[in-house]
Amino acid sequence: QLPHAALGNLVDIQKSIEPGSDAYSDDAQGLPFLRVADYSKQGITPPQVRLSENFVRDNTEKLAALKPKKESILFSKDGSVGQAYCLREDADFITSGAILHLSVKDKTQVLPDYLTLTLNSKVVQQQAERDAAPAPCGEVVAVVMPGCATRAADRAQHGEPDDHRAGDAPRLRQLRRQYDPHAGPRQRVGDRE
Image (cartoon, rainbow, N blue to C red; front, side, top):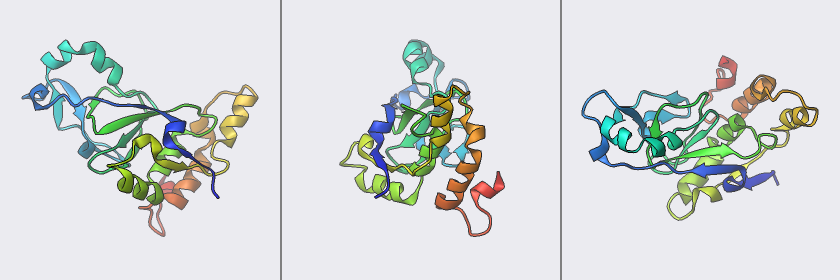
């Protein structure tokens, strides 16, 4: 049996808000409001909706705490259920309530990039779609392959810098080639990096 864990044991889960259409801006001004349709596992497109300056001013502290941080995983629980994307930098937007923010608890156990790939795998996608309505997101089971965090654990044990993106790039490329459901037989995601 492959090593596995419930998602709730691997990450902290933060919920966002659903302010309603009354909070939307009538023009291009205001804080970008990311919805499920605005991102995919490949990246983020500029949000079509913004929150009005009045709404932002009245909820400044609350909204500041809801901006996703670098290496947070955006995970959709409604619409296109189970869609995961790992942020490369701190975000200057707010997400809809249909998008959860996942923060890995222990990066020596599982890397955010690796967990994102796992969440986007066919197996986990099918489970997320099947369990979307009755089951909490934290009960989704993520398959954790052996060796996914070996380099990070070794670095932590020896007090080396945790530059896991560079050190684990070959492993991530290999995983993308193996598990990316959209990778074609000749040109796969990992081969383009």
